[in-house]
Image (tube, rainbow, N blue to C red; front, side, top):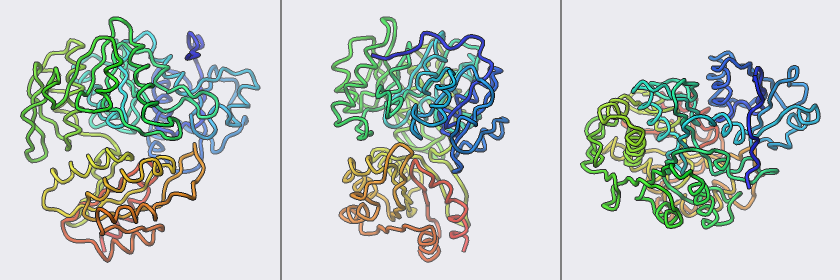
Length: 472
């Protein structure tokens, strides 16, 4: 049972965010500021991809976690799921002072209330699908609100917007609201009129003991839709098909499968463009790579169509979309070598990324620099990671990035993962130090290489030294 407060505090004038640099909280903070609410926050000193976003919007933060970081008596304190969640010392201090405290999941759900909520869930593709739909709605002039777990969307701008239109697009995460005090999936706090599900895979072994538990969580979320709600589902995904057997509401399916109500056909690749058709809606041109992104665009097209937008407006929005930060993002061209960055952190995402890269850059050597994200995920999906990574030409493995929600596990490492990858591809190297990585790149780079940094941790911080290594 979800314990959701009925309303946000009235006349919100000041919100304090604990863990403000996490991409979800950063965008919620930006959304609040756009409403005219004073925003303060705190976080660790580590550099995040959101640092520049917050700075550009005049949002500062204190370093560290302490009751002293909270200026005055804000109307609301919102806490990250990391850094101890609701047991964080700053959060505990706020509660002791009698301040209203909500988790990010609770707060996002409440901000969505009163709007036509559109929740986008799935192990991969949430950010891209949400961003594509937001782009379509914005270009159609509907002025939606959205909070999406990315720092920047091209050409929309930041990953959050307070709009005056009826729609609110948000990512819906199956991770828990607080690992220590509230094991409800975050998406249970959203009460949307429409849900888009991109795929269902086993992803959070620190939360779900097995894949069955994951599917049960998604089924519960789907079946909480109101009678006039709609589920837009990727029928190509096996996990989605299984969960749909337990779903009893209104449904629209999309995919390449003949079973899809909105079937994708005519998918072809031309220079810097994918052309495809969605049955019953129309033909589209997408300017980002990957079959998985065709699926994401089709999901956005179906959702927009169900919201009443014309095929012409949907086509225009999808055609304008240019991608997002940390999603097959172009970083630099160094002589004849291209450097990209991607957030992929699940084996399915990595395999899709490599396949997309093969299509986008035929006949070029593909180098994947991978930083695994969390010990629990690496252990649970160890063989799947090995098989997916083995699809690249050259694989360089950095040490595992331990998120703020878990402790290191000595039983699994990037070194042991390197040994597993060798069953699929001998051209894999474990490079624990930055100097090891840069020395290897200096000696082994080749003209025409495509280099992609991959992972949900802080691998993007390595770009300056990687660029220098590729220059020499």
